[in-house]
Length: 155
Image: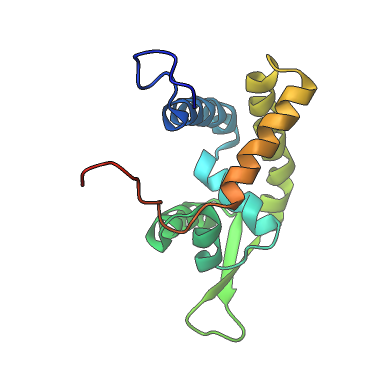
């Protein structure tokens, strides 16, 4: 990146991405709150709907530990949005699925997520927002399982 200023954060990809992520998450939480779901719960419901059916699979998709997933699954089950059953071939695992209520709510949650995205992307042209999404996906799908080691930083 071009370091055109003396401000180390001005050209920091991580700083700007983190700032954007916090703003998007806060806005999405505000949009989802009237529907009774948080951002992490929405992500879990969306992933289950597209085929991630075990807690371990969800943890892998989201890049979080299994304990974090378990903390989200409990409230979703209490709300009647998901249910779990023993995995047919692995008795130690659970297969998750949306309930009828979870499936009914999903389109409303997706609409809230789209509205949130649009509230941030409206300042870009359609071409710019497509490019931004493609670049973010390109980086995200190539993420290593553990953070890369940085060069030139004393540990």
